Image (cartoon, rainbow, N blue to C red; front, top):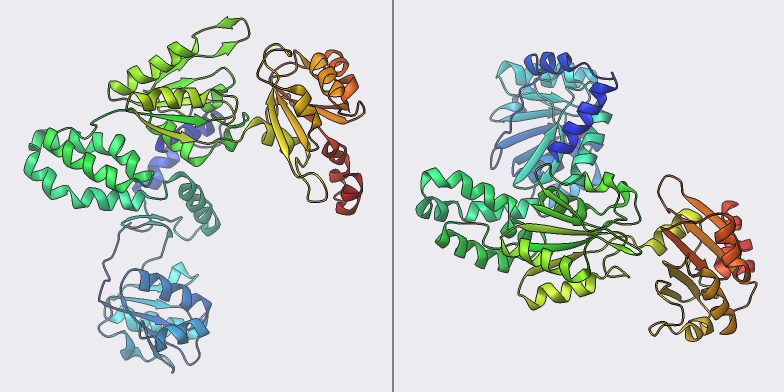
Length: 494
């Protein structure tokens, strides 16, 4: 995650939008000292019962403080919380004696005169004081907070750009695993056992391996009991990374920002990344810099490695204790041979996780504005591969043609003319609408429309090349209507 931020910073420096010398100046002259205060069981005062006071009350409650609200009138939530006994509400004006015994005070009335009185009372006794939206009167400010307790991250711009702080918070929230707090709590539970069983010189390396390794990944995936057993064994062995694992990950249709957060986190932690031809370099580049990258991309008639070799490669690296990411375009279990790899690894007792990706059918439909289903008549979607000979065993085109729903054909451009003929012979109307979506979500994306009977000519005329998806069905006719946002017209077409 930090590597990704550093990469962005280096890029902005190259573009001339950031003076690196400013970083040093800012680092030397901090306006505020970053710190965390323990207020558990200690008195905290909030003056003001409106929305600003409510926000501070919630924050202090989460931190375990004994909260007192002073305000003639208060928000209904403040009143309800006071009735439940979780806070104390004094329904009157502020008195300077209210600050006595408090470890922190918030002025949240929005009235400059009252807030100034609160500041004066707190300052006389040296109590930290925050005036909401007025950093000049405050001795401290509250940052934007990312809460994965016990992991807490504070982000501050010194009051100069609160919107920027909130945006940074959103970015960090998206980057951090949901169970990061569970991971920290798990590690805390075993600190004493590690200290007693692991020599001091090896302890740091042990924890580095733990946070980078298999056990941490199990916790983040929600498999606490398995992690517990593995951790106990690792402490006995003196090695936290007891075994390797393989994550079979869908990279989506191509755009990096359509990758799942889980996929991103696994790439950041991987020791080895085994990737296919359709996975673009911008996604592979998300892997940690010291990861080993192995291209096993296959092209028609030109195989770098066959599937047996790939299976063996995954098992080999996992058996060496490495965390392996098998990165596949789209979704790994839809025409991606992910099922074969899953079976192979499970049969050998290797820990495997499957992470879904946005499959090409969904990506192509989204960028072209084609609804694959519609409640007024299209209730099914069939996904089929056009790879291989059209008349070979495996795909019953006559059965596919009899379906009334939308048909999405993967890897079908090379055999498009023959596929169209088989579908028409099987009962699909020759004038059924079709769309060919080339390079969906990627630069150079193209969408070509026509009818089923002219499918082969369309691909030849427009020189369509893989990767491309063919969508067949009445929903294709809705594409242009959707541009006008007319739901009634869409229903009439379907």
